Length: 476
Ligand code: NAP
Image (cartoon, rainbow, N blue to C red; front, side, top):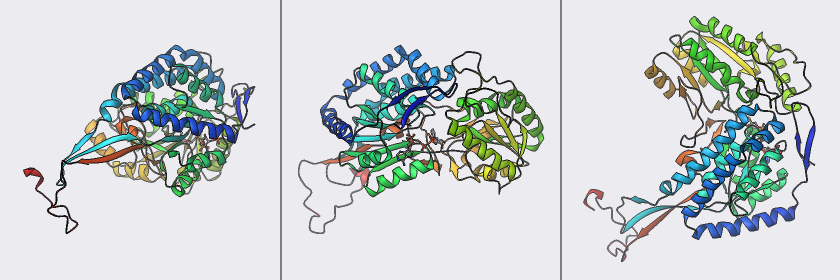
C-alpha cells in the first residue's frame, strides 16, 4: 500500500489507504467526462454559487482540516489554519470573478463579420499535487477549473492521502457535483494512462523536476496541454540601504515558514558587504530562538520536516555542501526529539562549484553570499537553473523595482514578504516550470479560446484568390 499517513512528529502510522483499481479509474473518467458535458450547458452562475458554498464549508471545517494536515505532514497548526483560510479566499475569489474574466472578447478584424473569442471548457483535467501545501495546491487548480467547467482527477502525494481525501470530501459535501474533483490513490502508470485517455485534455503538476519532466513527457507524447510548477532557489537580495530591522524580521520567516519546505522559500541570501555581518548575526539570532516541538501546540515554532526520507536527503545534501567547502556558521546539529526535526542551518562560502550553489535544498538551510555591487547581486541571483520567485530589500523602492526587472524569475517582491493570493499570478521560468496558476492567467490555463466569426453573408469579392481582403481596421 503506497498511500500512508505517518505523523512526522512522533512517527506513528495513522492510516493506510487502498490503491485505486483500474476499474475505479475507468469509472472516474466516465463520470468526470459526463460531468464535463453537463457543465458545458450549465449557467456559470450555478457553479459560482456552489464554489461560494465550498468556501463556506472549508471555513466551517477549518479546525479539522488544519489538524489533519498538521498530523499528516507536520506543519505548525497556525500555518495550517492560514493555508485553510487561503483556500476559502481562493474559492470565493474565483466564484466572484470568473464569469467576468471568461466573458467573450470582441476582436477588431479585417475579416468579414463580427469576430469574438469565447473562453470555453476543454474537458477533464488531471492534477498531480505535492504534500507541502496539501490543500492550497489542490484549490488553486480546482477553483478556477471548476468555474471554467473542467472536472478534475487528483493524484496527490503518497504521504498526504488524508488531507487530499478530506478536502475532496468537503468540496462534495458543499454541493459540488460528484466528479468535480475525484481524489484517487493512483500509481504513476495510472497517471500516465489518465493523461493519455482521450477524455482528458490536460495536466497540471506541482512538484519536482523529476516528476514534472515525466508527466510533461507523457502529456507531450499525447499532445495534451500541461502546466508545471516546479522547484525554486529564490534569491533574497539585501542592498546596503535596506532597513535592516525589516530585513531581519522577514529573512528568517522566509526560510523557516513550512519548515523551509516551500518552493518560494528564500534559499539564497545575497547580501551587500556593508550589511553582511549584521545580516548573518541577526539571522543566527532569530534561528536560535526557534523552539522545536509538537506542531499542534501554540508555543512550538519549529516544525518537523514531512518525512524521515526528506530529512535524510537534506542531511546528505548538507554534508555534500560542507565537504565541498561550505562553512557552517550556525546549526547542523541533531535535535533530540523522535520526530523528523532538522536544526535550522546557515551556510556561507558556497562557491560556484559547490553542489549547494545550484541544487535546491528543501528544508531549513539558508545559504548566504556576500556581494559588493548591485550588478554582482543581480548576476548571482540569475546564476541559477531555477527562476521562480525573488525578494529584494532596499531603502529606495524605485531602485528595487528596477532591480526586479533584471531578475530572471516569474515573481519578484520588493520590500515585501511573499504573497500568494488568487488575484496574483503564480509560477516561474527556467527549470521552475511553465504556465501560471491563480489570477486570470491561471484561469485560462485549460480553456478553449474559441474564435467565432459571424457574418450575415460571405464576402464574395476575394474568394478566387483564396485571400480575404485586408481592410483598414480604422475604417471599419
Ligand atoms: P514530487 O516527488 O515530484 O511529487 C509531487 C507529486 O508528483 C506527488 O503527487 C508525486 O507522487 C507525483 N509524482 C512524482 N513523480 C511522478 C511521476 N513520474 N508520475 C506521476 N506522478 C508523479 O515532488 P516533491 O519532491 O515531493 O515536492 C517538492 C518539490 O515541489 C520541490 O522541488 C518544490 O520546490 C516543488 N514545489 C513547487 C511549487 C510551485 O508552485 N512551483 C509548489 C510547491 C512545491 P508520489 O508522492 O506518489 O511520489
